[in-house]
Image 1 (tube, rainbow, N blue to C red):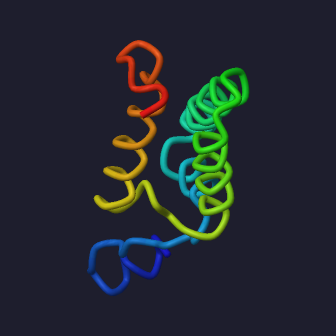
Image 2: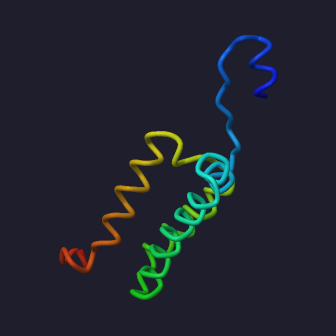
Image 3: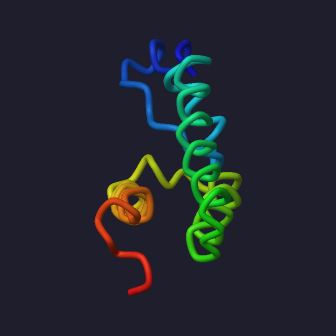
Length: 99
């Protein structure tokens, strides 16, 4: 791809791996991939520890969706992940439980 862009004198195009895990590995290296997995596993651990079915369902949905799409590469995916992930993560501290 780099050789082709050098010959055609055009910038490298973006790539869509259709896999968030692979995309993080390619974009940020092994450290970025490990950080992504750590964040996801921390969220999943808290969901299972609290036995919150909705939070567990959200995490399973995200883990499965990340296998087929690059959600964190687009704005609506980041907003969804950050918004709902944060709401569920701080649920105990804010007193939102049982709403």
